[in-house]
Length: 173
Image 1: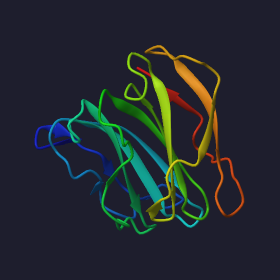
Image 2: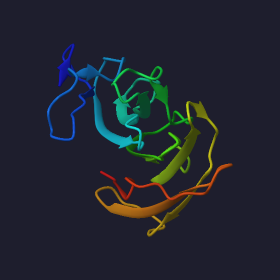
Image 3: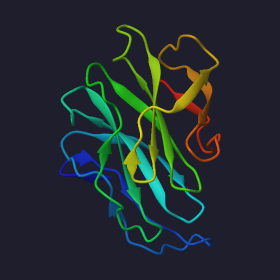
Image 4: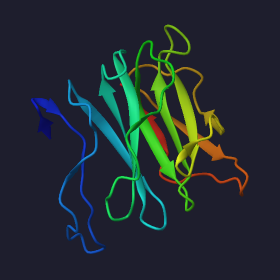
């Protein structure tokens, strides 16, 4: 949807029969330029996280952000930036959430290796950032624009290591 002449990320909760239980909620706060390519993951208790790509919000061409929500669609906190490098581009975000509310995110980036597209990951435990803790295995050493890679991620934390569901591939391009 367009907001202030630009695209916004909106969310709405539905019950198991597909009936809306909330009105639409605007996810992103930044409204200059475009927000696009959202992904969503849900914990077994109904809490969820939405990630997306944004133009120019952090001073780079594109960046990736996320925001957590309770089952009621009430925000569990402000939006937060996933990428730490702000050169080049970061986009095509994917997110997964386990039953405890821990999340792992992955996105494509040109910031870590100039001239190359790589995949970056970040893990969060509950409401806090616990730094990189994901093991990423890609089927391709190099990704060209327009190609799709498939990868697997394993979250290892103080609980039981898990392979998140909901993250299967990132489309580059």
